[in-house]
Length: 599
Image (cartoon, rainbow, N blue to C red; front, side, top):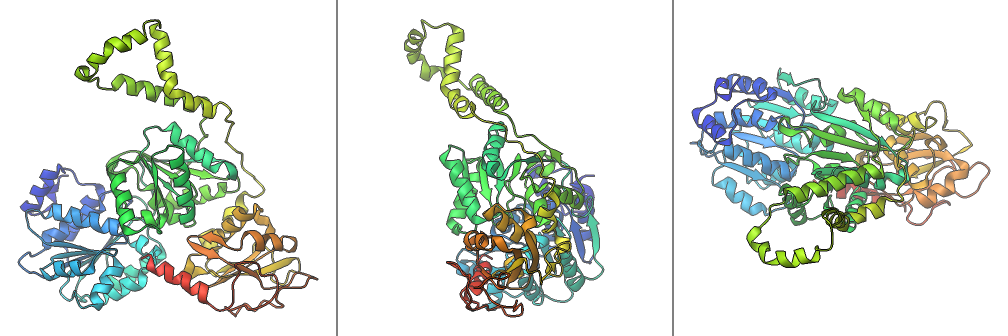
């Protein structure tokens, strides 16, 4: 099938011809004819990088009446980067139609955007927060919008935009068409379809939540202390890497990028603490391949649409399985091949099994390359660079007599050896004492470590943890945590922070209750002081985790008598350490405010 067969206007086909596009992708073949021929709602499910923008963008520009200087099409997407990319693509598609496409997003002058809209916008591409601001200022009206497109709907909901989306859709007419495009279909996305769409046609390329078939998924099991060294070996083993390294938190992202930079790797961080100008600079350098590696958090990397990414490295697995789909989907775009590499510790192997089942793929267990393997591949890369280097004969000719005289006493073999060694010795010196970083699974703790973080077990906010950790267990100390569901906390995330901070096994923990704005967990009495000293003040996704004892140790003083689960404001009591929760909701509310501001 060709684009000519889909029924697009000649002006749109001319733009596609200039772009060199001839054959539509599967999602485009399924979506475009329907969206051109039917006035109906639509749900399109396809992996990242399969051509979803053209699947909705081509039929949208095809139906725009450019003589009307009012918004007829509205596209809502999660991030500034994706907003700009979609707007750029739509301007290209509609080049010969002369449709006016305006992008509105946060982090830039809202007045300039208001002027652009006032000049007459046919299509608005917007992030939810900035669009809500424009609606409140009465700078934009959506009463004539005929088509609303929700792109990367699952990511928008993961980022907390549901209320904004609800508010925006209420400003649009009831007769509009809603087209929803998403890589995954969690229940929250399904609820949008139910509330705002009428008998939508659903097209799924592959199974729901299935990952791109052109991606190889490989996991490497290492000890926790070796995680960073393993990352370096994977990078060294792939000298032509152009990729993304995903970390869980902003702090970890900054630390990993800084370490890599200090050791000579071409890497920079991308996280929520960067200003918009800094983000633009980093993304600009990455797009032009001035840097090889972007070290990013899930939130910061959402909406990145960059071709030719060879590898995605999961420095840590995400807490939410859907985020793995979005991470891995950054590679193998437009039919190309890519690799998604995952570092796990010895207690996390069950995470891999759960992800395999969810995304309908198979992971291969890889082996962290040995020192000799890395040295060999780096050596051959060096040789290849020498062999393929263009020689500027005119520039070097005058220096050749001097150069040849210096090499006169050396044989050809000796020259090659010395030249190679001058560049290669640093690898040999670094790896000559390097050991094997591969680890074997800790079978005793394998299921516990992830089973407690699984989404299916978190629906009621807490669990009885297999019969252990009865809430009246006198062998356990109960702790209050100042974070809850609103802050993105879940049982798996809480356990991860606690275990990583203390080095404890998950079997030391009892019941976990994750509530809306705060949480509780239990731990063996003899470990309570360790929790206070090492978990209190830890970072969780950019939030400071403050913990405090709510139930006294058996036979011990301090602490608070009774659980007082219903109170979000535990006061007084012993056992509080430096930086603990200080009564009232101030710290927690500020965390939520910061979370909102990241939109």
